[in-house]
Length: 237
Image (cartoon, rainbow, N blue to C red; front, top):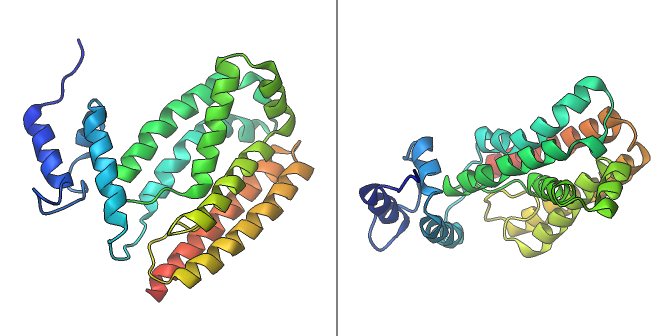
């Protein structure tokens, strides 16, 4: 049987989402099971995403908590942990891992947005790389499979750098993705993080055959630096 969302529940969510009919644009008061239930109703999700994007344009600065960041790490950890433990990586045999990680990344990203938090651009790029791997192995594309296996974590950092560049120049909150009214600081911090991502990209290429030094270490450094910048932004607010 296919579960059908409760109309009463849907009406309640819509009232919370619609500033014309309810007092709030946030679903933070709803339990996580209720949020996952909304995924059964795509129009409902689309409506809230539009409301959420509109709300971010007028929202006052708010802290980015740790749990959304940790939740977004789950997909890449599922893929990378076995390789890190073994000390060697063979992406040519990671087809199932890419598929599972991508299947986790999609609902996790939706839940983070529905809860009113900004997505980490580094992890958005990471999730795009996971989706690329899932497509390559799921559709059996030899050229793409070979490129992923040859470049290892370099492809991940390339995707993160591209998303970071786009966020730096096109998104209000930049590469750091923190709500702040200081646009000049956001631009400076985003450019610094983008420069670091370019350095990390070169590092990952040179050490692409070492999963710990060429993958795990720069991934941690890049995310920790961004997190420190987010904390500094909150203290300055």
